[in-house]
Length: 92
Image 1: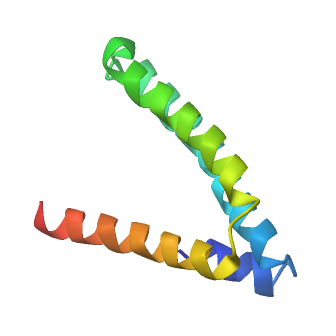
Image 2: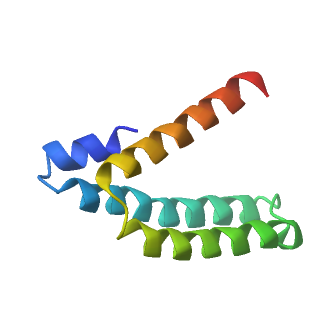
């Protein structure tokens, strides 16, 4: 939530590149998290496989669509995603 404004203001990146960079940061964090879960014995690859496949497919499709989206719609989509996550975390 704060990464895109930091990348645009402090690093001088254009907004589209800042969005792409913030999304690219997710991959190493997810990889690190999965290694930690695996080492502690809490990762079942059989259960995680559908999520991994969905994440790969979503990342590929998102990367293709990302280039074509208007920045206004991209901001709105991210805002809706954040709101959805917040509502889900609070009430479900």
